[in-house]
Image (tube, rainbow over all chains, first blue to last red; front, side, top):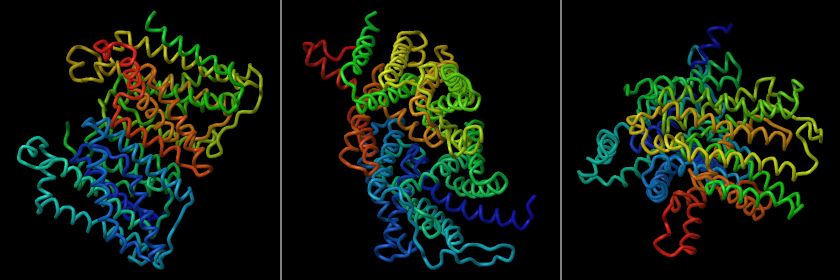
Length: 290
Length: 324
């Protein structure tokens, strides 16, 4: 079979990729945990943010790691507006309508990008794209290590926000008991929109961390969205620690199954886990039994 | 009889289209629109009447298309028999997915996600398996004889797909008027209440899934006979799954004519947008997305119901309007 060195390299690589997946999934699970909706526009928003990072570099010469400081707030505003003025009013409070409205948004964003930029694949060539360093037992690509580190910074920031700020408490209150929160004077529509905005800001962060080592085209986000769904389901819908651990697990599973089964069949491993978890434990590995 | 009169009238009206025009552009447009109406009708039975929103109807469409193509090309089976096996294959996939998901009690978003994942698994398998032609796809040899289910004239294809649509419309009406249909709607409106009243929820949903898959698979079989080519990105692609739900929702979810209205409107809109955009891709699909969001926001029961109400409010005196 494979030598230990190759296996270790595959596992480390899987963990690093998994961290980026987890970052995408974090936004998705946050939105699910509070609004109880699956945001089908998540992938298209990721693509949009990747284009944002691409043009920030190409036209302004802004490094993606700096562009995140502008893109994350911009996407927070975008997400806030989408929930407050489009998804919320259009859905009339029916879950099935929310699925459809977010799907409609995904179709609009993806194809507007296709119309504007054609199907061409674009990359940026930052000087450190291929830098790597030696961990002693394996080499690690620099952009991926940055992504891994950023995941924990972003997750800690989210935890601090949720634990120690008023809006964080309001979000948790709405997630637990919507009606009670409303009676206590919390503006639920505002909290929903803030949550959607936060989830969208995480997408922008993920995009900036992806761009140095990844490419963008109008359907680039789709590659991540099904994986992000899998992570969210695996980790338990709405669970932030679940998304972190789920992301790392999926990264390793993908890396190992493409090592053993080849690139395209490797993806099947992920979907089989996805279907299996949904069928056997729909609340996820870390979720409560129903 | 009154229930079926409108279906007969609409089908006869549509059947006259090739007599009025010989334009290949018009006929091609109508064939594709009716094929879309067909797989939209399949989705509508499970999603519209049963309330189970599948995001993976490409699983059935693709299976129908692949079985029809592969049996002909690799096993030399007659196209008409292959067509039948294609429909049966789609129904079987529907039964397996339905049995697995409904037994685990998946509903709502979970059901949407799991159907999406099944379609993706099939897409990946079809893109690597040698039997399906892997990445290259499968091409059916041109053989313009009726025995090979290929016709010189587009009008014949048009009448065949219209016949399939007619069968789907009649099936939908029969379900609507049957006890099974009442159970299905009960499941959609309140699953727990339906269960409490003694409806076998899992069996009803499974039945709807199989009927739904059968109709959608027929559209896939027709697709491959019409275009003579199938690959994994087309047959099991996400876009088929999206169109399958978009069509009935825009036209009128849970209504007999919703998918037909939705298909004609979206395809017409798509052609218009494409004509405006020239050769730049994407604008037609942007239009689909915008219409989808607008319909959900302002006409939650779809275009056909809105049109019906408008018509009635004009034709009937006040007071009679709005009933039924």
